[in-house]
Length: 544
Image 1 (cartoon, rainbow, N blue to C red):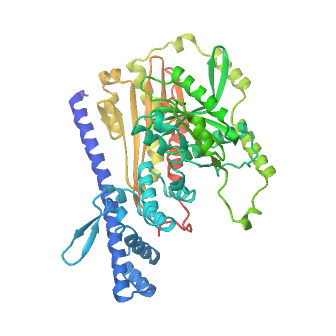
Image 2: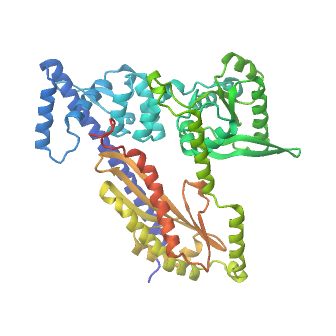
Image 3: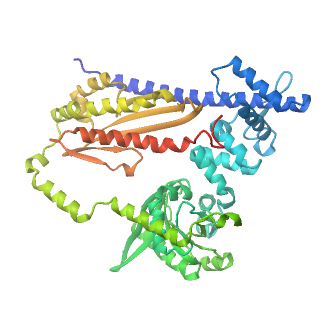
């Protein structure tokens, strides 16, 4: 078989990028057109209500007649027509939103067209949440911007509104103005909240600091969501050694928007001035021992009960390290008649203990793992460990392991095809690309290309929930095949710092169980990210 020239793969890669970009633009354009249509329908109903006195009965008849004419067009229910009216009423005439929509002259009337991407970047179901749960004006615009910035699902958007994020964002008491340059200080201040809401924790106000820390780590995904955009978890009880003395800071994160480490210290009591001194000590050690040259100064945040602003401001004076103080709440305020139905502190503590026990049970005891690993080491041949990678070995791994794996992935992931507008998959390896198994066979038959390759990415794309009419939803998942001198492995891009979750020596092909594990990991990641978008039909925020 003739060797395909490298120039062909470069051209193929360029064309694939253009096609993907065109698909993305098509999906965005479809969502924009849908929102524009919904506004036109809603504005028509709104104007006829004012001019002709249209009531509910007329809207019901309109919905029925439109369904007869367009039986395959979902979204023409009576309820959705009322949502369209609210949509037209809420956005265009608000002067705060003039940068979002623009008023254009028509032949006989005025028409609002979406000339900026902000409104069009979120699906219709998200707009329904905004209409039903927010007040017009700055509050609604705040959540619109945050949804676009963070890529919130519909359920996450609803949760953020219910927790009154717009009243908490940027309210931490800080010394950022005196310790950080502008505009970086403004970005840092906007990143932190006051108070933080930990209503996902089943604990009471009398919790101890270590219990609070453990509970937050157990719910690290929800905790990171509450922290906001850009936070990556590094560790808890992070060990710092200074002159043979050990110190342990509570929680360490890295924020990729601020480009710095963030230290969180937890206190279950009211703020005291000495807390700031200890936090400053931790910040200085991180800056000296861990911070990279390209990282910006470490920020410290103290979470405590009922921060007293005046005392905190005096405590932060003359501290050169950027620092913020904020409170936290376990539950939002509840009406008196509901408080009697809340679990007692004892019940909450029992629930926490149960969660901790379940967490500990998931971790194999060290002794058992050590015993098992030592047994494996005894059975490994020294020469087998030292086998270096060669093209014949790679070709054998492809035929016996990778090709069956990819076929299984394509088949399993194919279950989503009927539910999405666009599905696609392929392989990238530097300048080489393949979009089906046949093309992949050609690539693996090119010995020169394989000898130069050190990794290959299998990507899978899903665009737009077809049945839910959510055109802008996208999932892009990448499985990376890694080639090292004496082992090969697999990792998911954007997960676990891209550390391999499976490593194999070159004399070891994948068995059926390992292939299924990889497939299950891919399926689980997609479902984990997809599930928040799927709210039951009887939910008040569900799509019509």
